[in-house]
Image 1: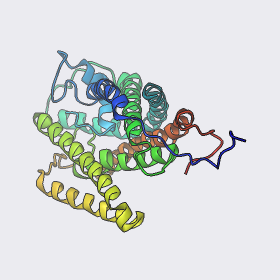
Image 2: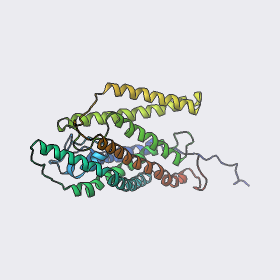
Image 3: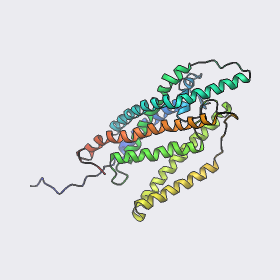
Image 4: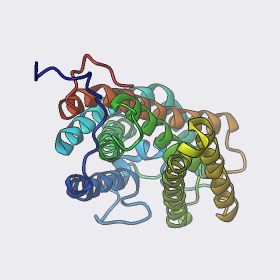
Length: 69
Length: 246
């Protein structure tokens, strides 16, 4: 009978910050870069010369609410 | 664990992006076309030569729009999963689906609705090209401040939770958020660059469509990610998925 216990209380278990931090920093940065390219590249600031990226994602940029031009 | 959540978050975001793209095609593009027609008409009236098209309208409204919305959706889903990974297990006894839905609701309010009340989305032809840097800066400041205020409000609600009870603690935190928003809204400069005779109907419908696209994205991510994450965290919580969380 030693393996029968009282109804165990299950609950959400938090992920330790130590485990989360590297993901949050590296993935977080990459994902924000992706949003930057859709939302602001070749608008207010420009990493790539020209306006092709801007023109290509033009409609998405307007409709997603970013200032476009 | 975090990697699993991240991958699933990005996939759910991609699905959300596909649905948002369909929504944008149906409700957003007609308004963009009307705005561009207005722009061309103004340019013609001013005697300016038509702007050369580097990317055709078909591409912009098709593969270009799809790329923009899908990349945005996947990135949103990924960032969402990281926030979830931190919040899960730190919001009382709220289970994975409840945590996901709550993050989506508060995130949509803080990152989209509140900033757009100050700096709403604008169709083509609205906005002076010379102020793009200034407007972009203000737009991002508004988003950062709004998200920071929301995080602080959630922290405040948790602090007051035991003393005031769930409802009153949440109301107080909500009011605190509103006060911060009112102050920031008053402090930051207004921008109004809508041309004199631009159609009010087109402007309104464009902005509603823009908000609708975001609503589709956040709803699908909030509800979809919760369903997917439930199976991932159940293993860690040692709970059979059949046993439902709060």
